[in-house]
Image 1 (cartoon, rainbow, N blue to C red):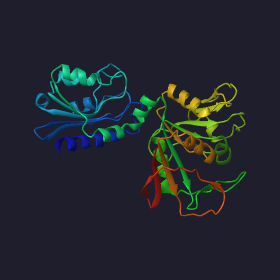
Image 2: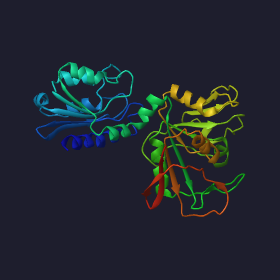
Image 3: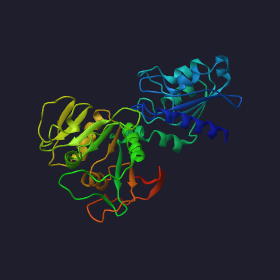
Image 4: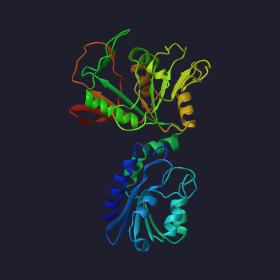
Length: 341
C-alpha cells in the first residue's frame, strides 16, 4: 500500500532523532509528488525546526508543493512553542493533502492541528500505521498520559538467574563484554535519567555516564535515606547533574541536589511525581535486585532488557523475577530478553 510505504519512511526518519529530540517527540515527514519523494526531514534536536519544516525546506522546486502530499508520523502542531505552528506552514505552502500517522497526545495540540487543516479545506487522512507511529513516540505518550517518566529496567544475569555473588565489598561480577557494555551505554544515551539504589551505589561505585557511545549522559538518581553515601563516590563527584532522594533536607553541593521524600510512605510514586515535574521523560533503572523488584511488584515499568550471560554462579543474589512474556534479541552474540509491560 502506497500510503504505508511512505509512512514507514517517516518512521525510519523519525528514529534519527532518538537521542537529541526529547523531551519533544520523534517525528519524520516525507513529501511526495506524482509517486516520487521530493523532500523529507525529521525533528533533529529539541528546540530546532520540526520534521515538516525540514521536509518542506528540502524540496528544491517549491512550486511542486501545491500539487504534493505530505506524510508525517505525528499530527502537525498548531500552537506556538519554540517554533511556529507546522500546520500554518503547510497551509502557507498550499500543500493540498496531508497524511498523518497518529494524533498528538499533547493537550495543546491534540486534534487541533488536524482541525485547522480540515477547516482550511485540505484533504486530511489520519491513522496510517497508527500503532507503529505511536510506538515510535511511546516515551512521549507515556509522559503525557501517565504523568510519569517512561520506565525501562535493565540488568544482566547468569544462566542460573543470579545477578551477583553475595558480598560486602570487592568488585561485582562482570557479565557484560565490551560490545554489550556499548549497548548499555547506548540505552543510557536514550534516557533522560538513570537510577540506582543505595547498595549498588556503595558496592559498585558506578559512574552511570555515557562513555562507550555518542550522546548526553542522563541525570543520575540515587537513593540515600540516611545520607550515608561517602562523598568519594563517582555519583557525587559533580560531573553530571545528580538527584539524591533522602529523608532530611540537605544543601546542594557541586551539581548534586538532595531531595527529601517521605520514606514512611511508598517512595516510588513520590519520585515519579518529582521527575515528572522536572520534565524528565524517561528513566533507566540499573539498580540491584531490591530496587528493580520494587518497580516490578508495583507494575511501574514499561520495558525491561535482560542480558543473559553464559556464566553460572550457582549461588548469590537472585535476579529480579518478572512474569511477562518476552522476545529474544541476539546482540553481538549475547542473548537479551526484551519484556514489554
